[in-house]
Length: 139
Image (cartoon, rainbow, N blue to C red; front, side, top):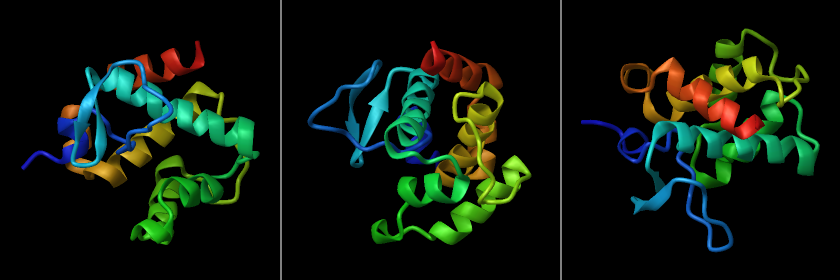
């Protein structure tokens, strides 16, 4: 079965907002936003990460993932942090500039693999989708 995040083209499993409508948002399914393309879903994921840095002063993976997938939402946040640090080949407390396109690319990969499963993410999401979403977020 194809994971919901893949079907919704929302690899970060972003929930709908009553205050904001994302570019490319075309609906809702399973409590999450449905996007018209992976690029627009990835753009939204990246914009959320950029907001973490700009508004909340978050620069480390541990901080970002704790906010993205908090234990209060029944996530295994510690395992998520370890998996993300493994993908980025870094310590979970290392500081990053979230505006770095390479950092954003690999954060998308890490989050997408956690949210959708490694195999499904890598089967359905192309590098070109990730690059398009990252570049659109940074534009």
